[in-house]
Picture 1 (spheres, helix red, strand yellow):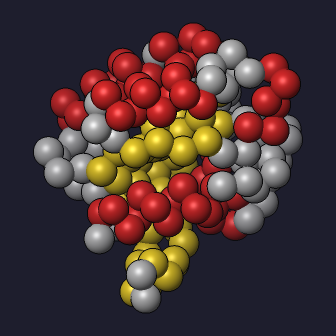
Picture 2 (cartoon, rainbow, N blue to C red; picture 1 turned 135 degrees about the vertical axis):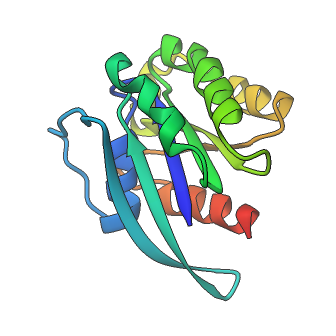
Length: 162
């Protein structure tokens, strides 16, 4: 099934997808142009699920494309960078876009990425959790660089879908 990833440029969407799909991290990751795909077969609750992660560009010029990719998605991750407050504030817009363009039963997770940079944190875990709770969506904090909580976040999203 399809999972859409959205968020501002540079928040780590591509790195999260690569860590989940291939267990790799590229510190020199180039910005996504348009969309990229990662597929992975995961075992969730005893079932084998093939997840196709659609990593969308955060660049403004590609934003209109998101509406074409949302239909049919069963899951979505709205990603922000815990060290950049504005990316968290923009999560409202990304969430609104996903909700407007997707099926009503889509499962959405807010993901605070770059947990390895906690010493530069601009958004607290509590702020992220409260934002998610208020909007009835899932929440996770991850570090694509360290691989921390990445698999768990994807598996939780997948298990909520199924």
